[in-house]
Image 1 (cartoon, rainbow, N blue to C red):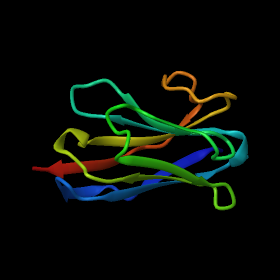
Image 2: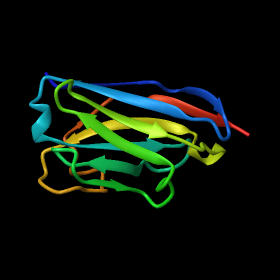
Image 3: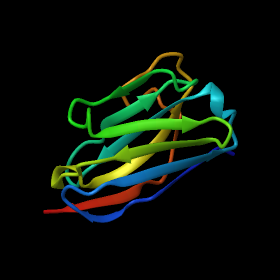
Image 4: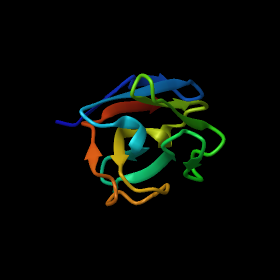
Length: 124
């Protein structure tokens, strides 16, 4: 049974940093592209960042480029999202996802497994 469990969310002020982590079990982690998505109230789920199987390639949404960094540790089966210079617009539930695709994808549909999400709230 595949499980993705996010942690690290919380309430912070604008300009602060936060690090999210996702622990994966029940799958051969190194064979999956990993991604982070977020969903704000009343909005559709949107792509945040993705990382290749080896960790050598990453892709970030324009809205977070230069502020957020995705990384992974295949030995620990974890994928992290380092978030700096947070803005109130970053407030959302953040989801970790795993895809068997061979290339980085921004659409949600190709992701096979999802975590339950962790809330990030940024106050102004």
